[in-house]
Image (tube, rainbow, N blue to C red; front, top):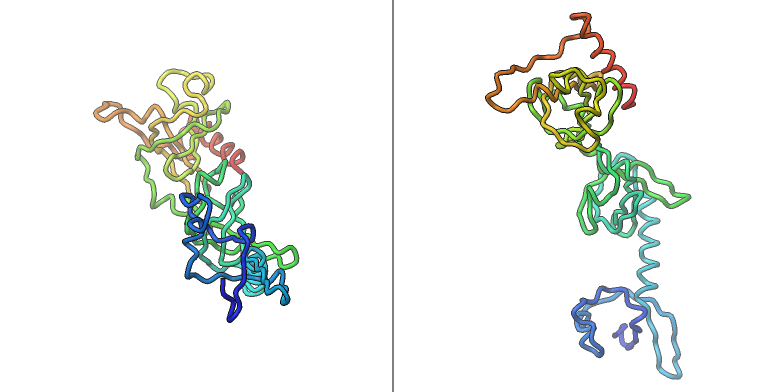
Amino acid sequence: MRLGQVRGFVPASQLSSIIPVQAMDEGDERYSTLMGGALRVKVIDIDRKRNRLILSERLAMREWRRQQKEQLLDSLKEGETLEGQISSIADFGAFVDLGGADGLIHLSELSWNRVSHPGEVVKVGDRVKVQVLSVDTERRRIGLSLRRLTPQPWEVIDTTYEVGQVVQGRITKLVNFGAFARLVDTGIEGLIHISELSERRVTHPKEVVSEGDVFDLRIIRIEGDKRRLGLSLKQAMPAGSEVDWVVAPTDNEAPEEVVEAVALEEMEAVVA
């Protein structure tokens, strides 16, 4: 390549530019996509007597990214929103290229729903908007969040769902007083009290459901301020059923229904 009035050479091992996979044959054809373009390079060897100049794109890019990261770390502010590209994924989170520096979206900050692996939410190459959570200049780390740029599901539950609505839920946990189910579309978790599992008497939820099962469920109680959602399996009857659904009573109603209120309180403790 030409550097001013001087010609230099960049060994293949010192190139970091992407070379198309289909051009893996030997010879000049392999580097045809680089012809006429500009590269950021660093001088790694110069011999004036032998008229030799060896350059490295790889080292130049490494230094450039270090400088960019330092500049970015100095300018970043907690709470601001940035756009970047998912550069890599690990079990504990996803890295985002912010333009010369990578920040980490921890697994817990990818979604308001429970996520077991980042691949469930993002993939390498995705363009995303993120919020800056923390900037550690000493350790040169940037903490990011994807979920905080979207509403917390419980905060908008009253406008998302209504009592009587039938939704799909996946059974996540069985307890003596009922079964927890996570709504498929938003990830909000609610309780199916044991009395709402079946028309027949049930002594334990495992007699009716198992963890991982997906059912149509009817919403019978919404308490967004307390983060409680009451669900019913037995009342989610097929269209045309003669069995009408009923709204779950409040804590002050019939004594026999106090058990459900207690169960909802236990649900809140388990979720917390």
